[in-house]
Length: 573
Image (cartoon, rainbow, N blue to C red):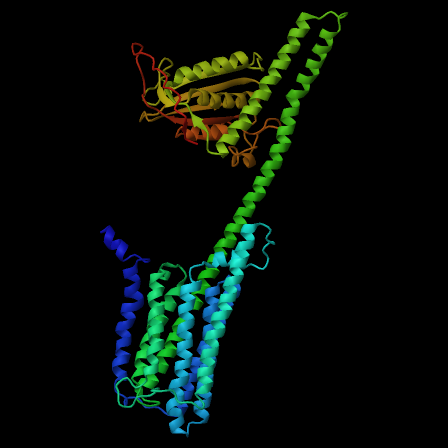
């Protein structure tokens, strides 16, 4: 089934051949069959003039669209094809005007019309073949990068070589157009006074053998179209070109059977040429619509990226301002007290008060810890943004970790007022009462989860002037995850801050870097958990919660404590 899907996929060779070659050939075979009867549709010279004039108009539009496409996309393929159609249409115009003006000269018209038709078709086939071989492999985006008029001057040898190669390709294009154009124009003009050998054969079924060389060229163009895999290009203009080539091949076959001017095969060939031009124009219009949609999408993406760049620029400015402020706050007392202690130690006559020295050292140590935390937070943010936040995982008792973290927080807390305390609850959804002696095993990084708990406890302490900080651990009924909630009794979370709470440099207070919640969010998500916040229903304070997947729901006192695994260094950020 997969093989069939691949065979009939949009970009497969077989699918393209069926849609662009086989089906059109079946339809065009009917035109060929009709053309075999030379008397079925015999027109006059005025009808030939109008049909050919339509071809001139369509071909001119085709040339204009291709050259305009080059102006927009800097696509040399389009330029080459556009010039090919322009010169071919010019020859067609010369062909129809002269044949109409000298229509009374039947012997002249008999040879002039086939020879000028041959000149235009041979030139167009050769131009399309060169375009496919030489200029179809480079994408329009690469064309823009290589030929953009606003490109900065080149100074390196590599860039100079690139510019030289582009110039050589331009020179090659001019050479091909010049040679082929001169041959086609000379052939057309010389038809005014020369009859080429065997240009019309009355005694053979193939009455116009000069249609065979353009036929071979168009077949070669179609062959190399598939050989170079142009059918895989997303631009619909290449699909239209393939259809046009199939129509042109049948046009040449039909015209080769034209026994006289204005018979069925002659008229059918002209109609098919008009149809080919029309198909090509439709493909170009659809391509323009395709690029317009692409440009709209690209412009939208550019605006979105510009907005992100502006936001990143604002984040950078915020980081510089916040970091400068937060670094200055602990550095000033460290430098001041260190200088005072140093001065006291160097002054032999002064007596050092040990109790005052001890107090100063505590201040220095406390501010040094602030600096350390700030440095660690900045390093963590850098690791998170670079996707290199590593987790050293082990299997441990989550409840024991929470109790130890709360104890460390209480012991080391700077804010030890008697009116602030921590209430710890361990709840189980399957039981109506609290279960404080239960254990929960999880797989994770003990240090990082403890860091999250400390961040949330510090955050709660900052906004709790009096009352309690409640830490609740809830074991879900399905025993697949545990939810930790830390509630404070502060002023709550502003609605404007709530939507951006876990982003960088977003803080509920006037102090702090606003990095703690951002780091906590990434640590929890690296453990396949979630973190969120909400204001309390009683209107006092807020609650921060996070969930962690549970490996083992509980363990008895007799079970041995789990041994930590060696550092795994797993990147889960």
